[in-house]
Image (cartoon, rainbow, N blue to C red; front, side, top):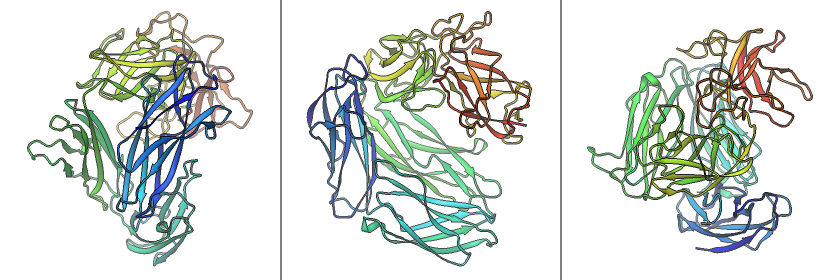
Length: 583
């Protein structure tokens, strides 16, 4: 375990305690040749608060170790602040071919936003696959891809036997300062190809790592059968010894023809292997909801990392998709809040500013060791299931508490600037985490269908394309129609509403000048403005922290299935963008 001290030389942010900042918290995958050590990777660390950082490092594995270098001018952070490099040595020469992940914990008991965990993934033998099977329909333009990342630029030379030029290597982004470059092996049906299997090869060259330069055997299956999709592709679950069961859904879709039918899933190779009468992991199909439900129960497990694989079965041509599961069971202890884990409840964007009165979520561990519980009455209380959230040491109203997430309201009177959030459960307090708070930080709510926002037409239907969602009343909005759009974070109102209280029906709690919102609808060229003044912007009666914007679409509004919409509150306050359908 290494210890060092880092002194603050810049006070761009005035804070009463050290404030840990890392330039990145995820490294890799780092491609490594078998039998060799990986290159040392560096993460910059600085103190954005007051006082002195005094950190320690702990690694979850022996092959990755962290140490502090000499303080220097910041490179990634920029500016003239002093940064300290965290040098992570990758001693991988004894590892067999495969993918491995290490967790480097950076701790300081006196700092805000500490501890933080740097995950380091190495791919011994590289990430370019040896064999790939891709599935497409007989329709022209149907495509499938297998994605991977490298640490070096690649060129690809495809060759196919029959079916024309259906194979390619695609570069899918600009990479990052962490030197990961995303690629995809793509099979695309050019049209006119009959059902069947077609073989090809893709020769990759140009990589600085010899193992990335190889011949990949690729099979394209052209089929009129259903092609199953599974999301997410892997499950990383957490609980504590004696903690609650974790329940998650794996969504099953179909990008092929016909109708997908979900069959009974299987669980393979759970570690530790428990008796069939007492499994720690189970999987069950719910075809009517299009999901496979996975349950992980820590009751019979000790602390540690437990793994299994859920095999998803269907009538799809690619049945038997394997979903790896990791289940981390922690020793019982105090609640732990993730650094950067206080997010708005609309976009859940990391590092985002939260408006006064906004609905927020804090993510972490051991917030409760009981089943999830939600508030059932108003006003919201400051303690729920023995747990509360403190914003700058002020208790906040709480909506919902579970093992790893709490939904709460940012108090209307919270101080503007960088605030600290602490979770208290069973008399124990978590580590403090920071979040920026502003008077106004509007965020439009999303419906969970593409990028469409939560809005309703005058007949209470959703402004989505017709027949886009089964079982839901949808139709495009119309010019001249008044919509109700829902949001959070618009800030204080007149009259004011108490923290945790439902908004009154009369008088309505309205957002007023000088920050009265304007709605921008349609695609705008640079310098253009097509602002619509809402009929009403304020808190929704009977709800806590939920705002509504009543806006009439102008007669010359842009039409289309995906018209963008966003909110402004002054020159520099802009919401996220959502979409709606307009006819």
